[in-house]
Length: 173
Image 1 (cartoon, one colour):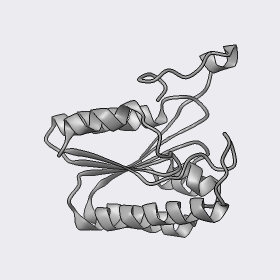
Image 2 (image 1 turned 90 degrees about the vertical axis):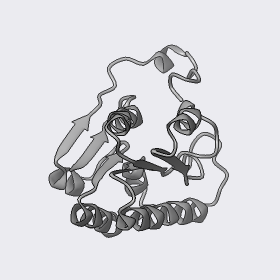
Image 3 (image 1 turned 45 degrees about the horizontal axis):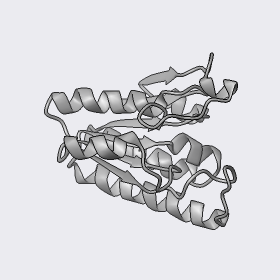
Image 4 (image 1 turned 45 degrees about the vertical axis):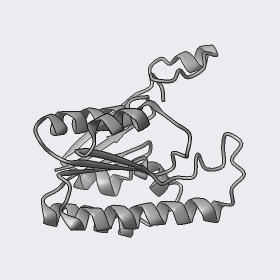
């Protein structure tokens, strides 16, 4: 199946991780490659070590693009996203994984860091290999929504950030 977790609310990556946790409990192997998200540590970095070798997380992004004091040239972000997509395609083609998660790929598509046709080829590979594929991130493209088997949209109703509260390690990241 092809899943999409999208929307403006918190919880898209968390939903994908929940799906991964369920699959690992059933003896499946899961790979998550993160687009956009940079080198800073988050809770999933540590928990994935406990789930190895059945779960592997690879951070391939250079951080948020054009916001939060981003000083990298756009080309660096583009190269990182294109490399992440190529790696994800190779890993999907390998057949070594039951589920592959393209975390924040919707953002990479929305920012034109990668081409829609290249991401569509990843979907084709997953379908051919009978591998479950999960796309996460805001702004999912209609082309992919139409093709997906399951789409969940997370809406931002209320968030502590709007009250000036900072993100907490282990909860928001």
